[in-house]
Length: 408
Ligand SMILES: Cc1ncc(COP(=O)(O)O)c(C=O)c1O
Figure: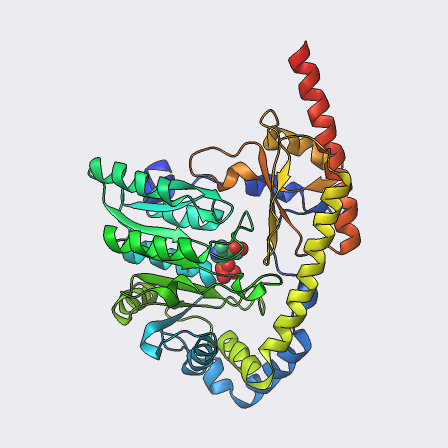
């Protein structure tokens, strides 16, 4: 069979992490692993009413094929929403995708040849690493600081890669409440990143699923809205703000880039589901998305608070244990003392009925062994407290075990 498999598919390993996470799905386990939106926040009654109406009175349209660019009704609604947020965009600058993961795949199809370089955070979103890997791109990781990528290192890596004669294509950034760390890139860094991208002629892939879920601090303009020369491609998903099951996002970019993306989307799925596009558009037209977002922000803020309070209460007071304090989104990031390997600790965590994502999965250079991602989005506040109590016990045991083995 091996001889039939494409080179591209051969490079795609089954993720060890995903296999481990299957174990975390047992009901007795409190899992901080999945980065899912809280299902209790889905506006299911409203969507049920809209769906019944659309299927009865608009079935000829919503059960049919649609435009590859996306349904006009959803693109209009998204344009209005973006304009309210200060974006200066028109309809030719947008394509609807089957959520952001398809957007990442289309970016690979449209812009990446084997060996092309994409710079990304160290750590960064696993699904993006997989998408760029599928197109055989080289991923070069740039360490993160408290206010986003270390841009001195970025410039250094760009210089090194150029010297080696590599083709540099893009930098991938999640500027707000990054997955997996919860870190937000400062305005100064956004401006400087754009300057570097301009000088080095790189595209900027700006992935922003969590920007609407800010519950502390002031919003920072997106890279796309600061971009003067049309090199930013923004991915904006509705997964975290409305429903992940609708599978909807938009890509926003210069119209000639959108044209390429539409061409590569056509053979992928012809069009994104017209039914779900209409459901989302009608939701925006019939209800106030801002009211909905206010509820989401309040709910995730409380959960983040519960997790931070529990970490402060239960985690061993050891040097080398740190966590981020995100101003929005779903995740916080825990760094453990160097001697702890979060992958080895995972089995102990499952014994104590708690789960997390091993941080190493988000590193393109194999680093981050002593880190883990904790998601507070789906657990209740009581589960968060109990889960962190369990996890803190696991860390304490692991530290003790390491020290015994070092002493003997
Ligand atoms: C940074 C980032 N990009 C993309 C996605 C994919 O989201 P979707 O395909 O549901 O839009 C996620 C989901 O967790 C994410 O965190």
